[in-house]
Length: 216
Length: 415
Picture 1: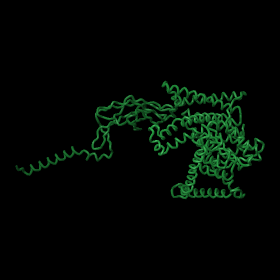
Picture 2 (picture 1 turned 90 degrees about the horizontal axis):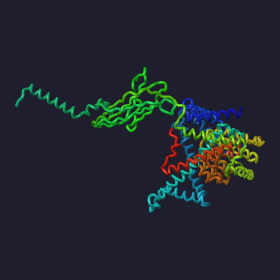
Picture 3 (picture 1 turned 180 degrees about the vertical axis):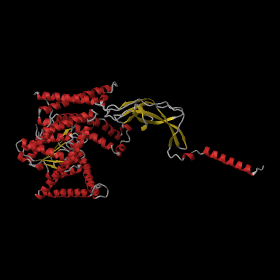
Picture 4 (picture 1 turned 90 degrees about the vertical axis):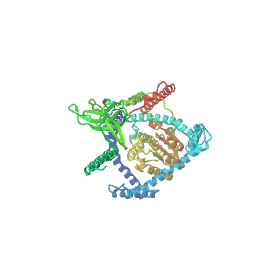
């Protein structure tokens, strides 16, 4: 039963989600909403599993003085501060001027923005490696990237001013993005869509069970 | 000439009357100040109302909606139609009750969807053309030309959305192919499956970690278990964990969602049991970090830099953090295998990882690694779907190029 019940739930929910796309009649029009609500409720309760797991593992690190236990202290202290400030803030804890809002704005948002901004440097280092003309395909990528990057900045058109309008670098960049790039992306999208249908069908029919643990 | 006092009074009275008359006739705006609105309805000469009012149940919906259509009137001479107002009355003993305005549309439209009706009631409708009567001192006067009462109409829910019949046919075809090939695979037919480099390298990647005596990291993306990519990622985790358990290599799975934590823990535990090493599984191998996208990326980056795993798998749904994670892995020289169905993240993984499963390969991975006939059969069915799409693209290009017919219409979903 440990395996059958999840398989039945998955199958029923999968079939309902499929049917509601084609059947607008009640109860199908509302069933997907019910299941989504149930998922959100389960998800909301499950957050405690994650939070407790994080605290447990961090506490074990600190108590056992394992390597890098200092970071675990930061996790525990940060967790407790945000929870306590949030809970003591009452119903309006998210309003401007509250401690929670201050932490969100000046600590959380800044840290997130910092992580996101690192991406710019990683894009540069990854591009440097990717745009090496090792073979024909890599050379094509390099040439395309050259035109697209130059065409996306004002200097691109400035250095190609002597060419007719339709051959300006911005136009070449647009052409690459509109035609070859879109064609390639659509090919990938078609494959993904078919793969999604196939995988979903395997899950609904109970053929794919590996996500439940074990193979069969 | 001299007038007597009585005559003077008469002349004075006449002058005041004349002045008042002039004031009234020359300054109408003085009296319009009582009307705060910029528009007001007045009765006017007969104007042409909309005709042929047709009331029908809105098709392909869950009920609660009636569609009203009408024929545009020929505007009366010198008058402009500004738009239309739609009035609705409930049916009382088969006759219209009191009319209420339920909406308005601009003049270019001759159709209105009333989405606020009860399926159990009947309704009558009237459509009024709004005419601009005159403009005086910036005040626009308008008049309504109401149509005749429509026939009775009501709404109901439908059992099939015919706008999606093409999707339905596609799903039936694809499911048919998949089920057919699954049955053939079950019957013992050997199915060919092309080599997928990224999946062939799984053993090599785990072996490398074993040789180096280092950890393996498996990152199942940042979406929850309701995303098929996460399910595909967790399925691959099961196979990778089996290989890792066989080689006695430690695999660590930091996750971003609580439900993924529960599922992944179960999957890894089962994998260890399956290869006969249940005692080697530690609860801490699968652990939760945070739901937050960049918090998760920061956490993994820190672990990667400090612990320097030999192998990193990225299998699931990734967004902007894909390059942050894979570049950090690349910087410590880990062998990296990524797989995602997020088209925007694929170039980043291709640039930073050793192997990348592109889109459909992620979904095929579970079947490929397990070599289970039933799963392989589904891949063959999927390939048939791809073949149909390919043929349709070629035929569509030819028909469109020679301007014969727009085949893409068949694939469009209008609702």
